[in-house]
Length: 340
Image (tube, rainbow, N blue to C red):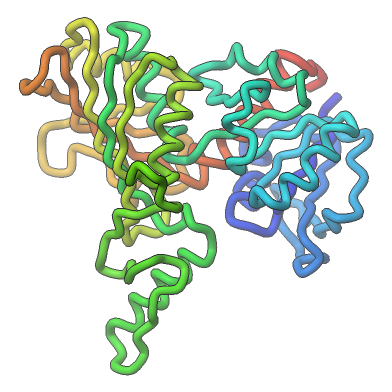
Protein backbone atom coordinates (compact mmCIF):
# COMPACT_ATOMS: atom_id res chain seq x y z
CA UNK A 1 0.00 0.00 0.00
CA UNK A 2 1.41 3.34 -1.06
CA UNK A 3 0.66 7.02 -0.57
CA UNK A 4 -1.63 9.60 -2.12
CA UNK A 5 0.75 12.46 -2.95
CA UNK A 6 0.09 16.01 -4.08
CA UNK A 7 2.71 18.21 -5.78
CA UNK A 8 1.75 21.88 -5.51
CA UNK A 9 3.40 24.12 -8.09
CA UNK A 10 3.91 21.21 -10.46
CA UNK A 11 4.62 23.33 -13.54
CA UNK A 12 7.58 25.21 -12.01
CA UNK A 13 11.24 24.17 -12.07
CA UNK A 14 11.19 22.66 -8.58
CA UNK A 15 7.73 21.12 -8.92
CA UNK A 16 8.74 19.29 -12.08
CA UNK A 17 11.90 18.07 -10.37
CA UNK A 18 9.80 16.79 -7.45
CA UNK A 19 7.73 14.70 -9.86
CA UNK A 20 10.87 13.43 -11.60
CA UNK A 21 12.57 12.46 -8.35
CA UNK A 22 9.50 10.77 -6.89
CA UNK A 23 9.49 8.57 -9.99
CA UNK A 24 13.28 8.05 -10.11
CA UNK A 25 13.44 6.97 -6.49
CA UNK A 26 10.34 4.78 -6.88
CA UNK A 27 8.52 6.47 -4.06
CA UNK A 28 5.48 4.31 -3.22
CA UNK A 29 2.75 6.41 -4.87
CA UNK A 30 -0.75 5.02 -5.22
CA UNK A 31 -2.15 8.26 -6.60
CA UNK A 32 -0.53 11.53 -7.69
CA UNK A 33 -2.11 14.96 -8.08
CA UNK A 34 -0.29 17.82 -9.81
CA UNK A 35 -1.62 21.24 -8.83
CA UNK A 36 -1.00 24.63 -10.41
CA UNK A 37 -2.49 28.10 -10.51
CA UNK A 38 -5.38 28.79 -12.86
CA UNK A 39 -3.11 30.33 -15.50
CA UNK A 40 -1.34 26.94 -15.79
CA UNK A 41 -4.47 24.83 -15.41
CA UNK A 42 -4.54 21.86 -17.76
CA UNK A 43 -0.79 21.88 -18.40
CA UNK A 44 0.60 18.37 -18.77
CA UNK A 45 3.58 17.31 -16.66
CA UNK A 46 5.54 14.06 -16.57
CA UNK A 47 5.57 11.57 -13.73
CA UNK A 48 7.79 8.67 -14.73
CA UNK A 49 6.28 7.18 -17.89
CA UNK A 50 2.92 8.82 -17.17
CA UNK A 51 1.54 12.18 -18.18
CA UNK A 52 -0.44 14.03 -15.52
CA UNK A 53 -2.76 16.97 -16.19
CA UNK A 54 -2.60 19.75 -13.63
CA UNK A 55 -5.58 20.55 -11.44
CA UNK A 56 -6.65 23.85 -9.91
CA UNK A 57 -4.94 24.55 -6.59
CA UNK A 58 -7.69 26.98 -5.58
CA UNK A 59 -10.47 24.37 -5.64
CA UNK A 60 -8.55 21.21 -4.74
CA UNK A 61 -9.74 19.20 -1.72
CA UNK A 62 -6.76 17.88 0.28
CA UNK A 63 -8.90 15.58 2.44
CA UNK A 64 -7.85 11.94 2.08
CA UNK A 65 -4.39 12.76 0.69
CA UNK A 66 -1.35 11.69 2.71
CA UNK A 67 1.21 14.37 1.92
CA UNK A 68 1.62 17.49 -0.19
CA UNK A 69 4.97 18.74 -1.50
CA UNK A 70 4.69 22.52 -1.90
CA UNK A 71 6.84 24.31 -4.49
CA UNK A 72 5.13 27.69 -4.65
CA UNK A 73 6.07 31.03 -3.12
CA UNK A 74 5.41 32.08 0.44
CA UNK A 75 2.26 34.06 -0.40
CA UNK A 76 0.47 31.09 -1.96
CA UNK A 77 1.84 28.76 0.71
CA UNK A 78 0.40 31.01 3.42
CA UNK A 79 -3.07 30.51 1.92
CA UNK A 80 -3.05 26.84 0.92
CA UNK A 81 -0.65 25.01 3.26
CA UNK A 82 -2.85 25.54 6.36
CA UNK A 83 -5.84 24.25 4.38
CA UNK A 84 -3.97 21.08 3.43
CA UNK A 85 -2.65 20.58 6.97
CA UNK A 86 -6.12 21.07 8.47
CA UNK A 87 -7.48 18.45 6.08
CA UNK A 88 -5.01 15.88 7.48
CA UNK A 89 -2.52 16.09 4.61
CA UNK A 90 1.08 16.54 5.82
CA UNK A 91 2.68 19.54 4.13
CA UNK A 92 6.36 19.51 3.09
CA UNK A 93 7.03 23.12 2.19
CA UNK A 94 9.87 24.41 0.03
CA UNK A 95 9.24 28.12 0.67
CA UNK A 96 10.83 30.14 3.47
CA UNK A 97 7.49 30.76 5.20
CA UNK A 98 7.72 28.18 8.00
CA UNK A 99 11.46 27.60 8.34
CA UNK A 100 11.91 29.74 11.43
CA UNK A 101 8.72 28.71 13.25
CA UNK A 102 9.89 26.90 16.43
CA UNK A 103 6.89 24.55 16.22
CA UNK A 104 7.69 23.41 12.68
CA UNK A 105 10.67 21.09 12.03
CA UNK A 106 13.26 22.19 9.48
CA UNK A 107 14.79 19.01 8.13
CA UNK A 108 17.70 17.71 6.11
CA UNK A 109 17.28 13.93 6.47
CA UNK A 110 21.02 13.15 6.53
CA UNK A 111 21.50 15.67 9.35
CA UNK A 112 18.52 15.82 11.74
CA UNK A 113 16.08 12.99 10.89
CA UNK A 114 14.94 12.81 14.52
CA UNK A 115 13.18 16.17 14.04
CA UNK A 116 10.55 14.50 11.83
CA UNK A 117 8.41 13.66 14.84
CA UNK A 118 7.78 17.35 15.48
CA UNK A 119 5.60 17.57 12.37
CA UNK A 120 2.43 16.75 14.30
CA UNK A 121 2.20 20.13 16.03
CA UNK A 122 1.06 21.84 12.83
CA UNK A 123 1.12 19.01 10.25
CA UNK A 124 3.80 20.97 8.38
CA UNK A 125 7.51 20.29 7.71
CA UNK A 126 9.85 22.93 6.29
CA UNK A 127 12.49 22.37 3.61
CA UNK A 128 15.61 24.56 4.07
CA UNK A 129 17.13 27.10 1.75
CA UNK A 130 19.09 25.59 -1.15
CA UNK A 131 22.44 27.00 -0.06
CA UNK A 132 21.96 25.78 3.51
CA UNK A 133 20.85 22.26 2.58
CA UNK A 134 24.02 21.26 0.76
CA UNK A 135 26.30 22.90 3.34
CA UNK A 136 24.86 21.20 6.42
CA UNK A 137 25.13 17.76 4.79
CA UNK A 138 28.89 18.34 4.80
CA UNK A 139 29.06 20.05 8.20
CA UNK A 140 27.18 17.52 10.32
CA UNK A 141 29.61 14.53 10.18
CA UNK A 142 32.56 16.86 10.82
CA UNK A 143 30.72 18.56 13.68
CA UNK A 144 30.01 15.19 15.28
CA UNK A 145 33.74 14.47 15.30
CA UNK A 146 35.38 17.75 16.30
CA UNK A 147 32.58 20.29 17.03
CA UNK A 148 32.47 23.28 14.72
CA UNK A 149 32.87 26.68 16.40
CA UNK A 150 32.61 28.96 13.38
CA UNK A 151 31.72 28.78 9.70
CA UNK A 152 32.75 31.35 7.08
CA UNK A 153 31.04 30.60 3.78
CA UNK A 154 31.00 32.33 0.41
CA UNK A 155 28.43 31.03 -2.05
CA UNK A 156 28.40 31.02 -5.85
CA UNK A 157 24.70 30.50 -6.59
CA UNK A 158 23.22 29.68 -9.99
CA UNK A 159 20.40 31.65 -11.59
CA UNK A 160 17.96 28.73 -11.36
CA UNK A 161 17.75 29.58 -7.67
CA UNK A 162 15.80 32.64 -8.83
CA UNK A 163 13.36 30.55 -10.88
CA UNK A 164 12.59 30.47 -14.59
CA UNK A 165 12.88 34.25 -14.83
CA UNK A 166 16.48 34.05 -13.65
CA UNK A 167 17.35 31.36 -16.19
CA UNK A 168 15.68 33.32 -19.00
CA UNK A 169 17.48 36.55 -18.09
CA UNK A 170 20.93 34.93 -18.17
CA UNK A 171 20.12 33.24 -21.49
CA UNK A 172 18.74 36.39 -23.10
CA UNK A 173 21.54 38.63 -21.83
CA UNK A 174 24.19 36.19 -23.00
CA UNK A 175 22.71 36.06 -26.50
CA UNK A 176 22.31 39.83 -26.53
CA UNK A 177 26.00 40.38 -25.82
CA UNK A 178 26.82 39.02 -29.29
CA UNK A 179 24.13 40.87 -31.24
CA UNK A 180 24.47 44.68 -31.40
CA UNK A 181 21.22 46.37 -30.44
CA UNK A 182 19.87 43.23 -28.76
CA UNK A 183 21.19 43.95 -25.27
CA UNK A 184 18.83 42.94 -22.44
CA UNK A 185 18.58 45.21 -19.41
CA UNK A 186 18.45 43.66 -15.91
CA UNK A 187 14.95 42.88 -14.71
CA UNK A 188 15.02 39.85 -12.43
CA UNK A 189 18.45 40.73 -11.05
CA UNK A 190 19.69 44.10 -9.83
CA UNK A 191 22.60 44.20 -12.29
CA UNK A 192 23.67 42.40 -15.45
CA UNK A 193 24.15 38.70 -14.67
CA UNK A 194 25.72 37.59 -17.97
CA UNK A 195 29.53 37.57 -17.67
CA UNK A 196 29.20 39.08 -14.20
CA UNK A 197 28.74 38.20 -10.53
CA UNK A 198 26.30 39.93 -8.18
CA UNK A 199 26.96 39.97 -4.39
CA UNK A 200 23.27 40.40 -3.63
CA UNK A 201 20.61 37.69 -3.19
CA UNK A 202 17.24 38.58 -1.63
CA UNK A 203 16.65 41.87 0.22
CA UNK A 204 19.12 43.84 2.33
CA UNK A 205 18.74 43.85 6.11
CA UNK A 206 19.59 46.54 8.65
CA UNK A 207 23.01 45.10 9.50
CA UNK A 208 24.11 45.12 5.85
CA UNK A 209 23.66 41.40 5.24
CA UNK A 210 21.12 40.09 2.77
CA UNK A 211 18.17 37.88 3.64
CA UNK A 212 19.86 34.94 1.87
CA UNK A 213 22.90 35.32 4.12
CA UNK A 214 20.70 35.57 7.20
CA UNK A 215 18.87 32.39 6.14
CA UNK A 216 22.14 30.44 6.06
CA UNK A 217 22.96 31.58 9.59
CA UNK A 218 19.54 30.92 11.12
CA UNK A 219 18.94 27.61 9.35
CA UNK A 220 22.36 26.14 10.14
CA UNK A 221 21.79 26.89 13.80
CA UNK A 222 18.31 25.31 13.76
CA UNK A 223 19.34 22.20 11.82
CA UNK A 224 22.82 21.45 13.18
CA UNK A 225 23.62 23.31 16.42
CA UNK A 226 22.55 26.72 17.77
CA UNK A 227 26.03 27.30 19.18
CA UNK A 228 27.73 27.40 15.75
CA UNK A 229 28.72 30.89 14.61
CA UNK A 230 28.07 31.43 10.91
CA UNK A 231 28.92 34.32 8.59
CA UNK A 232 27.98 34.18 4.92
CA UNK A 233 28.45 36.13 1.71
CA UNK A 234 26.00 35.02 -0.97
CA UNK A 235 26.76 35.74 -4.63
CA UNK A 236 24.75 35.12 -7.80
CA UNK A 237 26.89 33.84 -10.67
CA UNK A 238 26.21 33.24 -14.39
CA UNK A 239 25.66 29.49 -14.05
CA UNK A 240 22.30 27.94 -14.98
CA UNK A 241 22.14 25.11 -12.41
CA UNK A 242 24.35 24.16 -9.47
CA UNK A 243 25.35 26.07 -6.35
CA UNK A 244 28.97 26.15 -5.17
CA UNK A 245 30.34 27.14 -1.77
CA UNK A 246 33.80 27.89 -0.41
CA UNK A 247 33.60 26.93 3.27
CA UNK A 248 36.08 27.74 6.02
CA UNK A 249 35.59 25.84 9.28
CA UNK A 250 37.04 26.41 12.74
CA UNK A 251 36.73 23.49 15.17
CA UNK A 252 37.04 23.17 18.93
CA UNK A 253 39.35 20.18 18.43
CA UNK A 254 41.99 19.51 15.82
CA UNK A 255 40.76 17.61 12.77
CA UNK A 256 43.32 16.42 10.27
CA UNK A 257 42.43 16.93 6.61
CA UNK A 258 42.93 13.23 5.85
CA UNK A 259 40.58 12.21 8.64
CA UNK A 260 38.05 14.81 7.48
CA UNK A 261 38.26 13.35 3.97
CA UNK A 262 37.64 9.85 5.32
CA UNK A 263 34.70 11.04 7.43
CA UNK A 264 33.08 12.76 4.47
CA UNK A 265 33.59 9.72 2.24
CA UNK A 266 31.45 7.72 4.67
CA UNK A 267 28.84 10.45 5.20
CA UNK A 268 25.33 9.93 3.76
CA UNK A 269 24.56 12.07 0.74
CA UNK A 270 28.19 13.13 0.24
CA UNK A 271 30.56 12.30 -2.62
CA UNK A 272 34.22 13.22 -2.18
CA UNK A 273 36.15 14.06 -5.36
CA UNK A 274 39.42 15.50 -4.11
CA UNK A 275 42.57 14.96 -6.14
CA UNK A 276 45.32 17.54 -6.09
CA UNK A 277 45.70 17.67 -9.83
CA UNK A 278 44.15 19.44 -12.78
CA UNK A 279 40.45 18.61 -12.84
CA UNK A 280 40.56 16.74 -9.53
CA UNK A 281 37.53 18.57 -8.15
CA UNK A 282 33.85 19.03 -9.02
CA UNK A 283 32.27 22.09 -10.64
CA UNK A 284 28.56 22.92 -10.90
CA UNK A 285 28.41 21.86 -14.56
CA UNK A 286 29.28 18.31 -13.48
CA UNK A 287 26.77 18.02 -10.63
CA UNK A 288 23.60 18.77 -12.59
CA UNK A 289 21.07 15.96 -12.31
CA UNK A 290 22.94 14.21 -9.50
CA UNK A 291 21.61 13.47 -6.02
CA UNK A 292 24.91 13.92 -4.19
CA UNK A 293 26.55 16.87 -2.49
CA UNK A 294 30.13 16.91 -3.82
CA UNK A 295 33.09 17.90 -1.66
CA UNK A 296 36.52 18.85 -3.04
CA UNK A 297 39.61 20.91 -2.10
CA UNK A 298 39.77 19.66 1.52
CA UNK A 299 42.81 21.22 3.20
CA UNK A 300 44.06 22.60 6.51
CA UNK A 301 43.78 26.32 7.20
CA UNK A 302 47.11 27.20 8.80
CA UNK A 303 46.02 30.75 9.68
CA UNK A 304 43.81 29.64 12.60
CA UNK A 305 43.84 26.87 15.16
CA UNK A 306 41.89 23.79 14.14
CA UNK A 307 40.86 25.13 10.72
CA UNK A 308 39.80 23.43 7.50
CA UNK A 309 38.79 24.66 4.05
CA UNK A 310 36.58 22.80 1.60
CA UNK A 311 34.67 23.29 -1.65
CA UNK A 312 31.02 22.15 -1.79
CA UNK A 313 28.90 21.75 -4.96
CA UNK A 314 25.37 20.48 -5.49
CA UNK A 315 22.44 20.66 -7.92
CA UNK A 316 20.30 23.32 -6.23
CA UNK A 317 17.10 22.12 -7.91
CA UNK A 318 17.73 18.66 -6.45
CA UNK A 319 19.43 18.56 -3.04
CA UNK A 320 18.73 22.24 -2.56
CA UNK A 321 15.00 21.82 -3.15
CA UNK A 322 13.17 18.90 -4.77
CA UNK A 323 15.39 16.02 -3.66
CA UNK A 324 15.44 17.12 -0.04
CA UNK A 325 11.63 17.43 -0.07
CA UNK A 326 11.28 13.89 -1.45
CA UNK A 327 13.79 12.60 1.11
CA UNK A 328 11.65 14.20 3.83
CA UNK A 329 8.62 12.42 2.34
CA UNK A 330 10.54 9.13 2.44
CA UNK A 331 11.53 9.76 6.05
CA UNK A 332 7.96 10.65 6.98
CA UNK A 333 6.67 7.48 5.37
CA UNK A 334 9.35 5.30 6.93
CA UNK A 335 9.31 6.70 10.47
CA UNK A 336 5.77 7.97 10.96
CA UNK A 337 3.05 7.05 8.45
CA UNK A 338 4.48 3.60 7.63
CA UNK A 339 2.21 2.76 4.72
CA UNK A 340 4.65 2.29 1.86
